[in-house]
Image 1: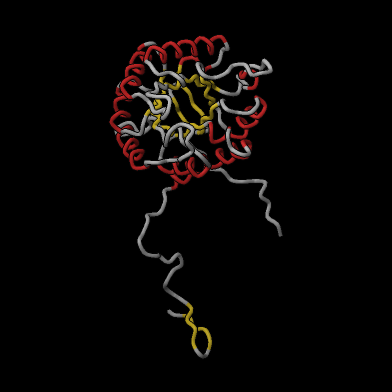
Image 2 (image 1 turned 120 degrees about the vertical axis):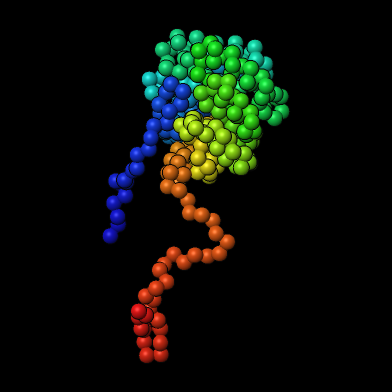
Amino acid sequence: MASDLSVTKTISDSPFQLGPYSFTSRLIVGSGRYQTGEEMAECLELSGAECITVAVRRERLYDSKGHNILDFIDLDRYCLLPNTAGCYTVEDAVRTARLGREILRSLNNPGANWLKLEVLGDGKTLLPNPMATIEATEQLVQEGFSVLCYTTDDPMVAIRLKQAGASAVMPAGSPIGSGQGILNPNNLRICLEYLKDNDPDYPVIVDAGVGTASDVAFAMELGVDGVLLNTAIAHAKDPRKMAQAMNLACQAGRLAFLAGRIPKRLYATASSPEDHLIQASSEGLDSTS
């Protein structure tokens, strides 16, 4: 008889508290690089994300047909996270952050007073400039922003950003758009240990480098609070299917982390009990006592 799979039990998780906002989904998805606005809108829905990043400086707000990207984003459903992508100086990042705040205030979107901060070091690697990122964080925090900082996986830089007032630290799994996944899980583990010492609820989010669903699951299994991605969905052969895969992977990885994996062992461990075994004999089967 076929089983009824239409009803699935779910285990509730604590809300994802990020700066002044609370979310159910721990996946944050970007709005760039899609073929069409319609494709983007479908992928956002399938991803299950409630927070969407928009690159204020780099993003083309209008496409070739004159459509505004915001026409395809339900502003009542999603909280927008303005993004200073494409900025290489403190001055540019701060100016872009202010612009993003004014845009979202005009739209009455709740994401007006926070941002994802990127201050890049060069255009080839798109790796962050640590000193400029720290300086920009300090200035933007003073201006009342809740700042989520894109950074390297260097634990010392992560600690300094937290001290500077960052609401969350977002170490890269690998370079932006590279699809290489989590290259240095040990550094991420150290970041988690140091950043959450005496502050276990402090948000740590993997940002950049994700290529497929298993990368998201692995990141969540490490204990990060969320994953931010864009290219892995937008440039997949089938973005819609990948969006759903990322949604499920984020949930699975989080549950696996909460459940706690078994320790790795060098040798096998029998999964069945070894006492009261049935023994085979020439006269038949005997049960051992």
